Length: 573
Image (cartoon, rainbow, N blue to C red):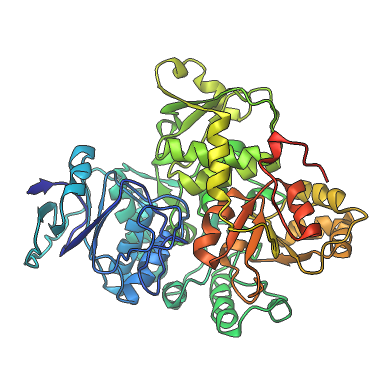
């Protein structure tokens, strides 16, 4: 059968189809060394993308999926081609960068929903530019030479853009602009806009590609053009030996950091840059990667950014420009679905991440307007946990909560005309059960700070741990940014938590921590982060207990967890 689609990356390939109706995060979802799908919550778990024509509706979750795709290409275990149901940006950007800087490429094609869903009936596929051929037996490799693409007639470049593109601002900015224009073309953007600040997520070490590409930019004279901060990195830079990070990771991870510092980026090393002293303001156009930070900035702060893939964040930092699309435009911030939260008799700190996770699954790429929780008055920590979980399961870059988030009032009348979904308490119980993957009640590690702990959370935790000692067999580890750590220390929270027996790690985050920092003897860990509860089984091969902060403290004191959902019982220690 033959299909005609939208070609995002124009080349050809053939292979066996690997189809799923569920979006996939390549970061923490696909092993970059082998191509195996390691996301245990995904229907393709255990299968390999290596050499396959991978058909998924879109990506979801982490912005680092672009870098994972490049690592897969370098390791020769990438998909032979990609087919999406909608124009996808994160994984596709990885292909664009690999093509521009490394001369490596695979085809990327978009089909309409009906055509895409029909692929489940087919075994083999061949992509030739915009044409897809399917069959029940292997198809011959297509002979194809992609046409030279003429400059986009719909994308207007300012004098500054033209100057950057022609090398007036240096070779690194020129390459960055070429990549930005390819990205803008995918989005159908008509022009670029000025960006006030950038936050680079591409500073985590995923393998040789994550170091090779920024070093290529630096060799071309790269310097950031706007204020730029760095996300959490792969190690605690000041204490990596003491904490137990392996030298084979620490050395290249530190080289990667030095590369970005040489470009002029600030070493804040946090995945929660919205907690810094001067966060973005409402209406400010920013260029942020890191999925949870993007969602929080758009939804809670009212700043404007797209969910930028890793390496586009670098290109924005080097040029100070970004496409006028997605969250930068009013139409890219308008809700397209209403999610009603049915009556919940009790809402505690464990409910918010579960709600975010569940609503993200329902919304997918749609921006939700959430109703039914107007009188709950969530804290910043609650919204941080909600947003991180939402960003894990959704591909949308923001949400609105009626009566809570700033822009929700703009859409008071729109809710009557949109598709409506309802979340019941029973749905949250099922989500809680899905995230609790541990096979027994033992707890060897309590993992807190994904995203990085806030000052509010340090205060709450120190109060829960007061006059107590953790069980010697249990590790409690908390990750935080340096700025928040210093504030927490000045208020005495760090000292109280260390007296309890906790270890506080700065610079890095749980998405990058592996053995031996995670004790090899640990069978199960416990966390209050739905984001980490989702990723940990695939990343660190441990069972997970998910619960409230109070339940995490109780587990650290007893060494086990066998309670049910916290909001359905009195779980205060």
